[in-house]
Length: 283
Image (tube, rainbow, N blue to C red; front, side):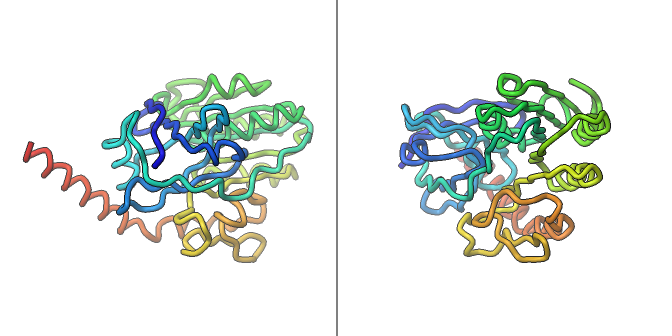
């Protein structure tokens, strides 16, 4: 069992948990993830590691309540409660070197995994430019954390309620058009966002890394649910990644795979909410 050391709300349906997992906290690195299971009947939930604290044994995770299990976690699991399993660290860590000037882009929930990568890149001696994006101000989080590890930070919102109105790809293009020498770009977020950013950096010949953690299911490569095409070869996001060369990823195939289980996921959420309503009526 793994105790929840803290829980806080970052935005609508977005929670930050610090979960006691001392073995993971000792060795977890930027870019890696854990697989969490709430209880004996719970499904496996892959979650990217945001931060590890070897002193307390705490591992920080950010969860967006979209599916049945993440909604159950938000509704039923509070600070002081325990989850059954936390397996990890899994996946290959980010390749952190001293590249020069780099750009880190986080869109939506992708802001969470971007933070440890940006922090590690800064610690390695890079000049780090951060670009954060969200649909609106209330969905933006970790701005303060990214500001602390970035030399320059751009904030974009789709509706213009905060920062500049527009998309992260707009800010990316402006920087590249300016002629600044950018050694490498990391882009993490919705698949369509990563695809568009990849298209922009391809124009300028800038090496780009994307994280495909959002397509993972069981986290071990056994289910095949996270199979993607990279340079024409089949790869598994959970064991071969989750980071890949953006210019070699077949994003159209990736996005089609993300829709494979949409009906089953919707049915599971509907059943869970119905059970919640029945439970409430009996109290």
